Length: 473
Image (tube, rainbow, N blue to C red; front, side, top):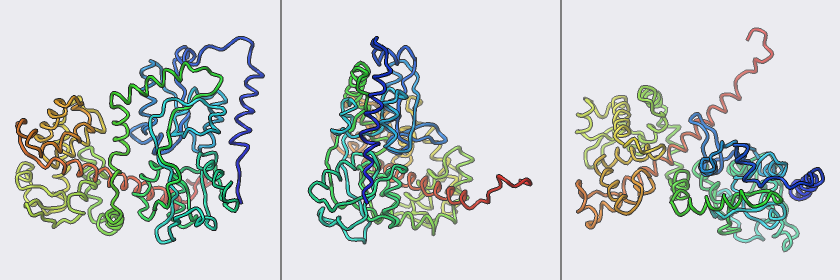
């Protein structure tokens, strides 16, 4: 059965607009940009989603958050985030006046244009039909007519299905207003539903957690994504936002934000991801307490240390490379001597030594480098050596880039393998593509470890007894 959700998508927003007009005064309100400046706040509605906005122990983050925070800083006002859990909540929050704009990864669609103005696109996404490996890949729309499909209510994905339904009347689906894209992808991976529709960034993230997810069909390609503003509020804030977005594109800010959240997931290794998740259960438990203790002692997230260890040795204490590096953290003999380690193959010595060595690289990165770029550069130095990183910073500057930006360093490091460049820098040749791949792999492993440990915490919380009504608790 198709749950159309017509009220939420069309009638409710239009009714809000009508009521706003009826209760308004005869005088014109101030321009929206003036309201923001006078209030001293930019109120933004966004989604609780890895592709938009999340809150971690380190504070708020996410692609949309980074951009809109920079926009608020440029306006000289405080950012106030109004986060929602469902796409269906975004437009009503915006049209009710609770927010000045929406920064929530919204596609520009004809139906949304009826009651929203969209700014200059800052990203484009592909829209995928997703299935689970082993259930039979649909290759045509005709192949999905007898399959269960669940999508986000009030999303552009519903409009795609409605368009297809005009040609295929027997096409049916279910809309869910209480979940996010990640939840629906999980349902497909768990076999609870046959198919869903997901934008490429959501799929790119979740496939690392569920290696069995696959793209069946591309339903749309290069869908533009933009910030949204309520109609009837003028275009002053929209025009200023467009100036910001275009300047952010020209300056490389958009590319840096994209790299921060998606740069490490461009290349996907299905077999490698499955092996990692399997080794998480079979190998890591022997060393987890050591990683946790080393992380606590040196102020580093133990999961990042474990990700380094997996990249280095796949969590094998007796690992030895052809070049003679050994142990879980694959330390050279010179590094072990520098750290005062007697046995590189002793797991605890290797893990604590690797943590100390990583912390040392972090301290050597210039103070002008902010997180997370600081961590990525320290990882590159752990792999290729700090002096080769210094050379890459020089090359980045020569190319007109930012030596404090990982995205520019990751472009400069591979040039250390070209005579044109390595002949000009103090420390010469290096296989500069290797530290870039090294960092990207660790970032991917780190993301999966965060997800796996959070799943554990959720399961543990669900098994705890409810003591809220226990007088002895």
